[in-house]
Length: 112
Image 1: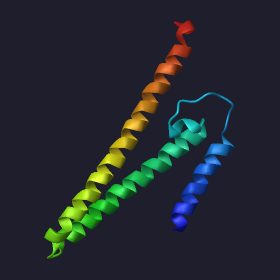
Image 2: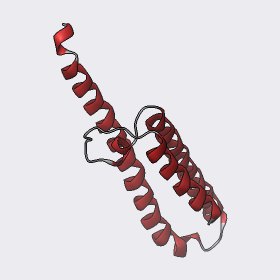
Image 3: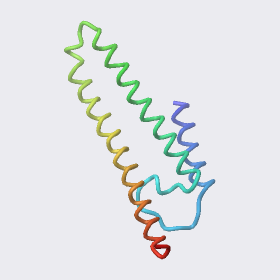
Image 4: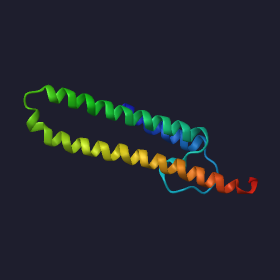
């Protein structure tokens, strides 16, 4: 529980410590600016990698148990949830990168 609290407080700190008055795209990563956006991305990546590692470890442990068949349905559901969350994060970050490039290049059109 304390890890979740620390993580949430870290997110609030990043959001308010690096804020600027500028319109944003309505997606969570765009609430952060400059260094805060990079730190948010890194911390999110660490959390998602930890989730994948934990699910993998649980799967290996359950696979070795004799009653794995009874747990497989539950674990399959949890695995699907994990895949959807991780892929959602990857698509969000990819969208942010593409949008940032497009808007950055649009703003620099006068340079070309």
